[in-house]
Each structure stands twice: as structure tokens, then as C-alpha cells.
Length: 440
Image (cartoon, rainbow, N blue to C red; front, side):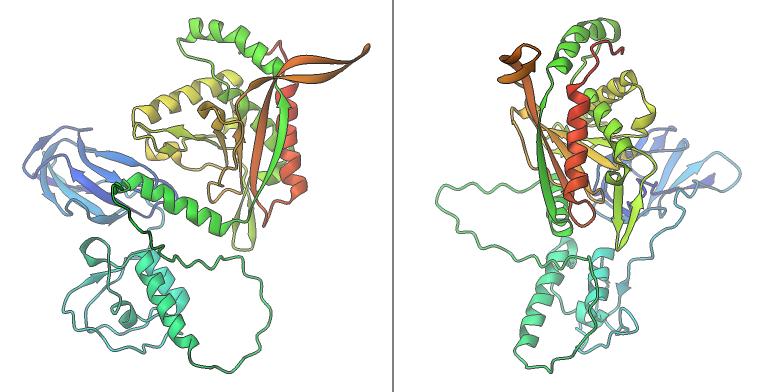
């Protein structure tokens, strides 16, 4: 029988590795093409890896809980073909091999680092994630110094918190020794200096300790990273959406009868956001160091709830090329996939701007956190009936109107108040001036 090498598939442009949650088949099991072989998890989403070919699962090269690089062979499938085949390599450029060190290695992380600590005599291999290695490189730590850090992660691996605590203690000890002041040229550095300090919490009698699930940990880390990365500013606008509400009330039953689906406000908000992005293209950017990347595609992320109650952000790709009908269908499809936990990795990749509808929770407004590496996010609040002053040809009158708040958080490094505030006002204008003759 021929051997087919199953590789860890590409899970998105920013994903370099995935964790094997569990194998669904055992060695020696007969498998059919498209059978799910294993469940994997990234920092974005959980997914199943199907078998590209039928045959027998000959050998599993990794076990549950292992972290595997994208493009690395994870299993051997025995097929009936006469030639040896390999699944297509899905990655254009794979990140460098994570470093595993022996207890005798003392080479530095980079050429500028000098090993100053003695090697620990552990006698065992150690694994360091790319994140830990990058921090070590930036801080000038040698591999010998890394090995001094007691890891608290799985299999005693060194985590981000472990290395940051080590650096904090190291810097504190160095601060006790006076050093001559050196004059350095002024430089511009947008990279945030982040040090996580554990907070001591006193536990009282009767308190319940609840462990975060994996998704909640990822969300927490992503939120903290975003706040440390971007100086957030939020602008607010109140919009009169009476025409929008009237139009939807007229069309929702027609849409339901014709399509068998609900017509929610979300695609209407997305439609207005896309039009505003066309007017303000510099809101559709990302920041790479000191370089601004102006995105050609307009890919709108929409926050959706998972069965666990956690939130995820599936992405409407090329939203500017879709009609209102197309947006409504895709919004419903992504929402259903999120609720049934069937989102694929590609469904949550590539977003350039994000919309979150806090009004679905009964909130009138919110200050959303930017979904990195984007630079802005819009929150739409609860639509409420309110008395409002209207100007007419016969004078001012008070009328009952449908109103809502739009809150726009943006990265003040690249988006100033004129752009951030002007953008959200334009979104409000499009919602307020909704054409009652709009077709869907």
C-alpha cells in the first residue's frame, strides 16, 4: 500500500500553528475520504481536519495536546495507490522551526545577546513557542537564560507570563545597581511595552472558582493585547432611524415568506458601513510598525454568539461587491454557522473593519475594543422610541421617532477625531436617509 502524508492545513494567513484537541480515529482504522480525522484548535477557532483520501490510518505522528506547525505532517494514511503521494503543501511560507534546546546549548537568540547565566542541568529537551522566543529576542535573553525560567504551562513549558515575570524580576534587580546615564538619539517607537503583573485576589468563604475555558482565555488575551496596542478613542452619534425601521417593518414579512429567513437590522447596518468606508477609505487600514496598510478589500466582521456564550467575529468578504440581498443572506448564513459551531477557519479570517450590535443585548451604547490588526470598530445600540423636535415648514413640532446611538472606537495612532468622528456621522447619515423604496 502507498503512503499518503497528511499535513496540518492552512488555517488562515495569520495562523502559524494549531493544537490537536483530540484524534477522532485510531491507528489501523479504515477511513473514507472526507472522514473527520482529528479536531484542532487555533487562537481563532476550533475545526475538524478531514481525510483527503480513503484508506487506513497508519500512523499518528502527534498526540492529543501537541502544538503542530502549519504544513507539518501529522499522520500517515495507507492507500491502495501504487505511488507515494503527499497532500498539497498549503503554506507559501512556513514560520521557522520552534527551537528545542538541549541542556548543553548556550548559543544566543541573536548575535547581540551574550549568555551571562550558567546552563541548568535538566538533562531534558525544552520547547519554546514562537511568542516566547520573540520576547526573548527583543529583550536580549540567551537560550541559557531561558532555561532558568520555571515554566508553568503544559508539560512545564514557559508561557508568556513566565518570561515577563522573569524579565520584571531581572530588571528590578538591575535597577538596584546605579548605571551611568547614556545619551541616546530620540526615536519613534509605536510598539507598546507590556508587562503583565498578576493581581493578588483574596478569596472569601463561599466564593466559587470557575476555570476559564480555552476560548475565553483566547478572548481575554486578545482584548488585553488590543488595549495595550492601540490608544482607544470613542466617538458617539445619535441617529434618527425612523425610515429604516419603517422600511424593515414593511419588508421583513415579505423577506421571510420569500426566503424563509429573518431580515434583521445587521445587514442594513453593514450596508451603511460599507458605503461610509468608500467615503472614508483611510478607516479601512492596518498599522504595521510605522507603515499604514490601506486595504483594497472591504471585509466586514460581525460579532456573533457561539453556543458556549462566547463571541466570535465571522467575516463578510468583499462586502462592497454584495447587494443588500446578498448581505442579508450571508449575515444569516454566518450567524447560523456560529450558533451551530460550524464556522470554518476561513470564515473568521481577513476582516478589515468590525461591527458589533450591542443593541441585541438591550444596551443603548458601548465602547467596543478594536479587533486587531484593524484600527476601528462600530457598536450599534438599541433602537428606542423617543420624543424629538422636528423642524417643519410650519415650525418646530415634537414627534415620536426611532433613535439609536452609534459608538465608534478607533486607534488614535492613525485615526484622528476628524476621520473617526466623520466616519460614524456618515454611517448615521446613511441610516437616517434610508430610501423607503429600496428593493431587496
